[in-house]
Image (tube, rainbow, N blue to C red; front, side, top):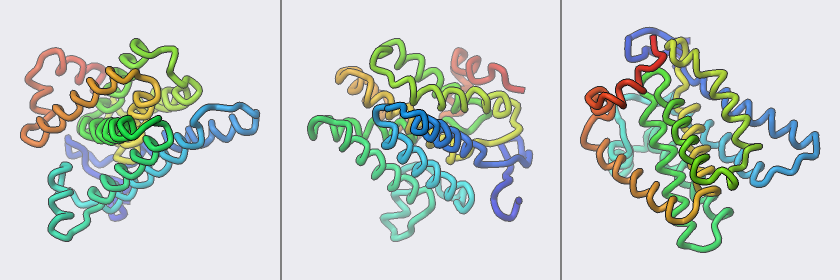
Length: 245
């Protein structure tokens, strides 16, 4: 399993299974099949499912085949400019195409298409950035979902939120204990789901503010370590370490 990339060293140099987050996409697939069998019409369910499966597959490729010597959007796109396509670059390009396709189908005009494309793409990458310590990506997604619920409860598609939330909560304790690693096959899914819910549920001003924050965070993380920043800020450090062995 080590040779295939299915087992990898975590930040404590322990050998644990990677890509366990593929269970999120599989859970959604099963639930959507049950919705279809029951004749339950769920808005955007096919678009959401196909997007989740696609981004999880791209993440799985990066988990299994990716090299760790090139990191960050700047690094992957820099390699692409030099004529070298990394698995991370493939994931970023594919994620951008998926985000654009979603935005094209859910947006009323080109202004919203552009806004929603970047919103979904950067949210996807943001959760991926968080997934460097046990539990961090799930905590970030849950906090984001709480904010979305507070701002746009009536606009949330709960039949799509429920299976993802259930899969996250079932997986969460194992992630906190460092028994498994969700990998990009999982973090990409959580990020895309959060971005999808934001794009379909939030009003225009809230989406603009969210995008501005995402751009600022991405600019910051290209220059500094997100983990070091979290360790230095007490409230972030407390949330980050909560429940972790």
